[in-house]
Amino acid sequence: MAEPRLRVTDAVGQSWDDPSEAQIQRLYAGLNLSCPFLILEHPDLWDDDQHYLQMALNDDLSMVLEYRDGGPAEHYRAEVPLQSEYGGDEIVVPVLLAWAARRQGWRGALPWVRWDVSRQEPWSD
Image 1 (cartoon, rainbow, N blue to C red):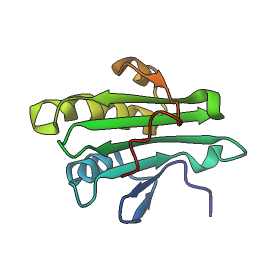
Image 2 (cartoon, rainbow, N blue to C red; image 1 turned 180 degrees about the vertical axis):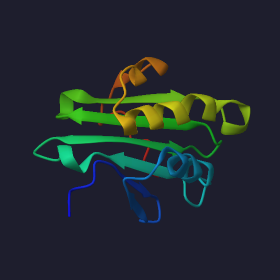
Image 3 (tube, helix red, strand yellow; image 1 turned 30 degrees about the horizontal axis):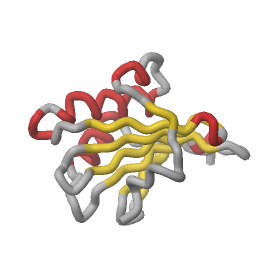
Image 4 (cartoon, helix red, strand yellow; image 1 turned 90 degrees about the vertical axis):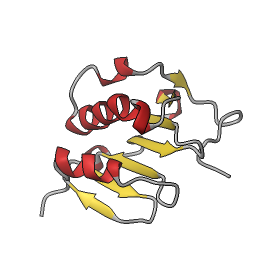
């Protein structure tokens, strides 16, 4: 069996290999504070570097996204201050889908800043 090109994992550990765009949209729509994040990975790129995009809901239902496209120097994050019901999904869903499909231009949708793990830990309590 061939290695999946895309794997999506949620906060409770369920994962889906090669989900369709509709499935990714449903997974996003199902996020809540009990299951607040999705991780998208390209397993076919796994080597010594990391290639992923993840998004999480904050307690106020705004969102933060993070991607890594190789080593530590290629690790970025962006915040979406809008809740999905106020337009945040109109920003986040296209980024998730474009990254998953490896389409060009997805980085231009958000103001990405280099990740500094010593100052930023949005995934921890």
